[in-house]
Length: 260
Length: 137
Image (tube, rainbow over all chains, first blue to last red; front, side, top):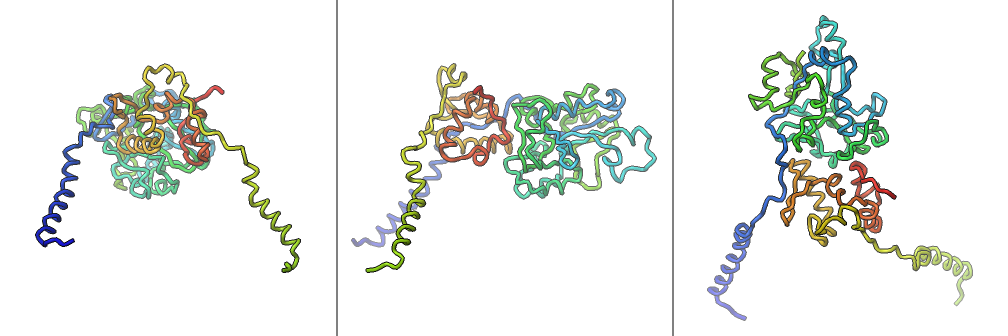
């Protein structure tokens, strides 16, 4: 079959036009309802943070009070392995010298030196754990929460080396047999070989509840809120009291403030 | 034609063939029954319109992709609600939503997964973390 140059160019042009219309058609014909939505009851913020008023905790709380720890561990099915090496830590207590290393003068009041400080993941603005994670299993959410995706965690433990606060724990063994609290069947457990830590109760925030530890504390020593909202309770508390953060020299910008 | 040590060779060959085909004749006539996932849980029986988040055929072939997308939306994008084609809203949660209706894991999930050779503790390893529903059996 013979064809003229003119005809060939015409056919070529029509073909090119045909190919070009497909993406246009797709764009016009698309009527996509939002299939995935956030929960309308969810609590939202620009920067979630926590202030811990240790004075209130020590003065108003009964000695040896474990309400916040117990609430956290019950809600998240945190196991109690029993050894220090394999301890799974979400919310735990430590002495001043271990909480604020480099900031101790040795001349602190006895009460401060000996009393327990509540520790949890600091949900740092510049979280080192998220930078070293090779699979992006741990990452920063837009609202400031340092989140774990247990599905992606390969258990390399880089994040544990990266975290200057020891806020991450590795599951050396199947944690299911060591859950001493009542099993919460609405929240998953973890499995052997993943790293876990405090998640600022993001699953509770998503249904409009405040973190379990904050809710459980009877003396209101834990204050949770939006740091970017100038009318929030946490901003009010931080404006009224002097507060310190753990290891500020590292530039991680922790989201947990201690009022001493 | 003479085969040296013919007797030994043939006896050896017969034993070899017998052993090599052992799985075939040992399992002959014992085909595993095809899976029959059951839908007779109390919640499903009460439903007027027995409808999952997607049509049955799509769920059968694509539930793993759906679950994977759900996981991404919930964990990484913070979106927890799924709007189905019929406008109904579901919470995207294997442990809290799927299991609400399909509370018969051993009669539903495991039926096909075991038939397809997916061991419970290898793939799919959903239930090493997610808490399986309690079943009375």
